[in-house]
Length: 258
Image (cartoon, rainbow, N blue to C red):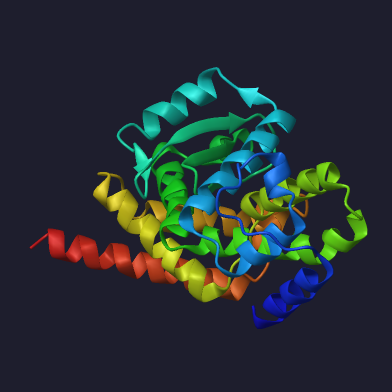
């Protein structure tokens, strides 16, 4: 992160700086080179929400949205989940064989039909709890922050003032960070724990997170064409993750049976 901040300082030295306060958060405002570099080091939750909102809108425009039985199932499974950190939830299904799901700071939950096809309702609920956990644990904020600063470092100078194009790059970078973010094992452990507790609190099978991880681990051994396969390529670590949530579920079952 220190390296990225140094890069931001270098970007600032090449740009005419302006303070972000009062800037309208439209595409041109987001494309401000100085604004990008300054904001990355001290990005607020409100800025994360707006960056996520615009990036999700771009992803939605590029995706095929499923409004039929998959969307109805998602709404049924997630009934009662109304907000993420106080931000109202909005859910959509992307029609694709890709196996993925993600949540973002603007309350968006996006689920791919490929994932829904392989998970039962409880497992789907736990997986989405895991993704919501990334938002609540501030992991998503850090991904957006890093994508934002990396975009400034890579594109500001090259764009030579072509701020309209830069805005597209920025939103694309953040969208990619949201849809295919990869985190450290420590961060994933925390999100797994959140997903397991999310399932328990939602009245789902306590082993839902464990069962979902087992399915994803098996899948990652069978295909090279999935985002999930890439994310779960480290099999020993994934097995440790599964063992941790199984222990969490075992502990809950033991306490609840007393």
